Image (cartoon, rainbow, N blue to C red; front, side, top):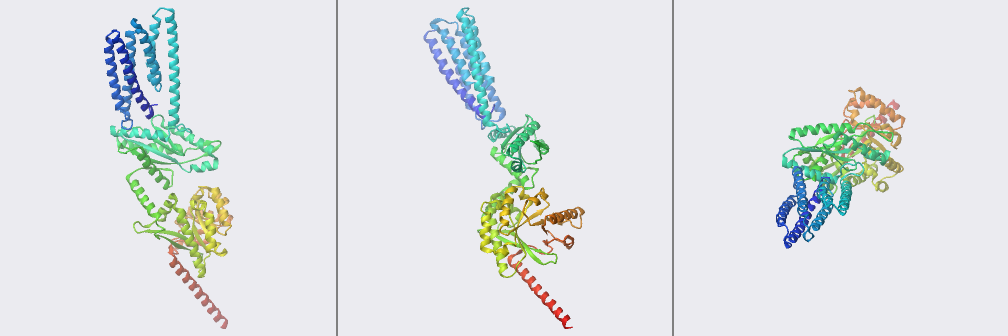
Length: 637
C-alpha cells in the first residue's frame, strides 16, 4: 500500500512520535535528575533530541506532489530507520534502568516500555514492516526481564506479556487489514479489481516527476471498446459486465506486474508502461505493445454461450516529463483515441502536435458553427435525381456552410461536429423547415417532383421533439400529396446505435405518409437483417459500388445481389455517385429507378434548381407540341 495516502499517514506518525518521545523523555530525565539517579539519562535524552531532529527533517522534506518515485523510496527507508532508532532508544533506556529499584524507578521504566509498545501498535499499524519488528524489539526485553525475576509473579508477568504481545500483534494486524481494505476500495474498480481513475491520477503524477528527474521516457495507452453499448443493449448488462471482467483478465495476464492497468469507467481502460532509457526505444515498444493489445482483445470471447467479437480504439501518448500533470496527458491520449474513433475505429493513433492543431481547429469550427444559423451562413442545395430517360423527377437536399474565416466547410466535417456537440438538433430543424418550405413553393409553381429526399441524423431522429416537429411542419407547409413525396434518408451505420427505438420512431413517422430510404447501402453491418426489420421504402446504393462499374466484376456481382434483395423486399433503388455514361448505362440494365450524380448535375442552389425544372417543363411542352404537329400532319396527309 505504498500510495499517496499511506505516505501522508506515515508522515503524521513521525510528528506524533517526535512529540511523544520528547515530552516523555524529558519527564523521565527530570525524574532521574530530581532523585539524582543515573546521570547517563542526559546522554540518552540528547540522543532522543538528535533522532527527533532527524525525524523533523524527514517530516519537513516530504511532499508527495513534488518528490519522484526513487526519492520517495529512499525517504521511506529513512523513515523506517528513524522509527527503529526512536524505539531502539526506548528499549536501550529499559535495558539500562530496569534494574534500578530506588524510588521504584524500575517500575516506571517497565510502564514506559509497555506504553511504548502500545504507542507502536497504535501509530505503526499501517505497515507490517514497522509494527511487527518494533513490537518484538519492545516486548522481548520485558519478557526476559520478568523471567529473570525468578519469582512466581515474574513468570506470571512473562506469560501475561507474551499474551499482551499477541494481543498487540492481533490488533495491529486487524487495523492493517482494515486500512488495506479501505485503501483498496478507494483505489480499485469494484467490478474488475483494476486500479481506478483516482489511483491512476496519483500514479501518473508520480511517474511524470520521475521522468522529469531521470530524463527517461514512458507511454500510456487509452483503450476504448468499439460498439460496447450494443452488447449491453442486445445481450444485457450482465453479459457486458462479464465481458469487461474478461477483458481485464486478458490485460492483466498480458501485462503482468510490469505495467499499471486502470479502468477509467465504462468501457475505457488505461495502461501505463514502465520507464525506458531512450525515446526511440520507448516509441518502438509503444507501437509493438499497442498492436499486441489490439490483437489479444479482438480474440473471441465466450460468455454465457454467446460468442462475442469486439475491437478496440487505442490512443497512445508518449511521456517525457515535460507534461504538466496527469490531466494533461490523459486529455492528449483521449484526443488520439477519438481520432481513431472518427477514422472508423479499430486502430491505433499516437498523439502528436498535428492532432493538437486539429483539435484547436475543431474547437474554433465548433464555436463558429454555433453562430452559423444566426449569421445566415447555412444554405441548402438540391441535387437532381433523374429517371432512366434522364428526366429530373426528384432531388436530395444537401446542406452547405460557408464561413468568412473558414471558407466553404465540408459537410463531412461540420455534420459530424454538429452530431458530437448536439448542434445537429437545431441545424436539423432548420434544414427540415427550409426543405418543407421549398417543396411547398415548388408545388405552388407547379414545378412538382415525384420525391424529395432529406438526410436525417440518429440524434435528430431519436430526439424527444422530432415527431412533434414533423407533425407541426407538415401541417404548416404540406398537404397529403406533398407529404407522400418526402423521403427521409437514414444510414446503415446509424442503425447500430439503437435499432429498436429507431424502428419505433420510423413507424410513427410513416403514418404521416413520409417514406424512408436506407442510404449508403452495402457499407454497414448485417444489411439483410435491416431489410427485414426496418420499415423502409427505398435503397440507395453507395457510390463505392458505382465507382468501379465496368472495371470490377465483383462490384457488378454485388449490384446484382442488391437489386435481387430490393426485388424480394419490394423496394425502389436509387444509385448515387454516377459520374460516367458507362456507369449510367450499366445501371439502367438493372432497371434502377433513380440516378444521381455529377454526370447529370452537381448540387444546385434553390433558384438554379427551379430554373432547371422550368427549362425541363418548357422542353416537355415543346416536345408535346412538336409531337402533336407531327401527328396532325400525318392525319391530314
